[in-house]
Image (cartoon, rainbow, N blue to C red; front, side):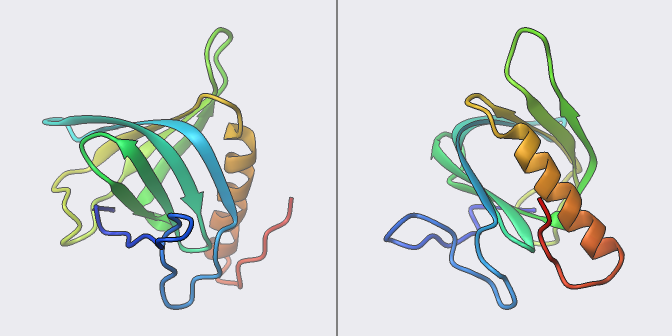
Length: 140
C-alpha cells in the first residue's frame, strides 16, 4: 500500500494506468475511508477506483490525496451490512516497501450512497482470478 503514490490524470482525475493494468472496473463516489495503523488514524472522504491490479482511494480532502492498495495487500476482507447505517467493507492492509506506511493497518470503506455489495462482488471475483493464476475476467 502506498500513500500519495497514484498519479492522477488531469481530465477526470482517474489514476494513470500501470503497465498491464486494464483500466477502471468500478468506481464509487461518497466513500468514507478510515485507515488506522495503531499509532495514527486517518479519515478522509472521497472516491474509490478499482482496476484488475489495485484499489485507489482518491481523497476530496484530508491527510492524504491518494491511497494505492494492490489487490493482494488487502487481507481479512469483510462486508458488513448494519441495520441502521451504511454498508461498509473492512480489512487489514499489508504495507508495501517504500509505500509510506510502516505497519500493518486496518481499513474501513463506508459506502454512504450504496455500492458496497457491487464492490465486494468485483473484489472477490478479482481475488478468485488471481488465486487460480488466470487472466482477470469480470463476471457479474
